Length: 261
Ligand SMILES: Nc1ncnc2c1ncn2[C@@H]1O[C@H](COP(=O)(O)OP(=O)(O)O)[C@@H](O)[C@H]1O
Ligand SMILES: [Mg+2]
Image (cartoon, rainbow, N blue to C red):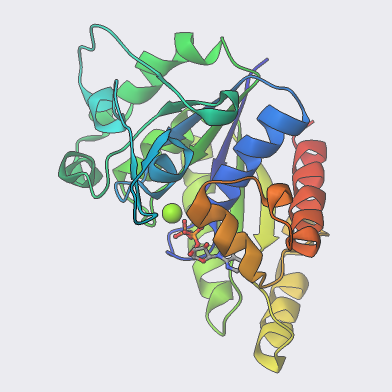
């Protein structure tokens, strides 16, 4: 059975795209799995990192994007669905950078948000894992992602308000599970980009006391090499100075797969 894993949080900058990208690398390269990435965030960050790229003389790069894009999946009729082939053997349904058509879908009718699932269900059968990068919102695009998800993980960056955001997110996910998708499993909360500040320790304790069963045992600390790896579209373990970050990411990936069993 294909596992469809979404990384969701309505806040931006918490690590949804970073974890989506590294999860895809980890599953494709270390676990030799067939992996499809679906980029449901209109910003298209994940697509630009996963896609093949043309490097210019000055070192900047252009991702090469083609085929069906995520916004197309909301159409009632979709004739030929073309999936991109990317480095590391990863397949991708992409979103161009800041795609207005996908932003527009945030306000679409609910029945439109069910179209991506309808179009993709037969496609998903060809993969061991599908990774969905979700938008930083609680709108229709998140609904579209979660109705076709089997397992959702929530990356969280600690702050004084982290608990409020997590409560809103969990109640949205539970609402979708109750009304649209009773196959949806909540894997839990992955603390990412943490430092050892009093503020982070305190807000971690609030979460641990409130929802202990939801918390991943393993965390990812603030690790600049992870940012470099994401920018370069590389698996974290390929960076010469990324050992600590690589170990943390890999430990979280192992826990994620264990929880998804
Ligand atoms: N653990 C971490 N340590 C350092 N930088 C990180 C870490 N996790 C994410 N980042 C960086 O923070 C920024 C936001 O992360 P991103 O994955 O794009 O968040 P989101 O997709 O939730 O908006 C990116 O530049 C990313 O490289
Ligand atoms: Mg993102």
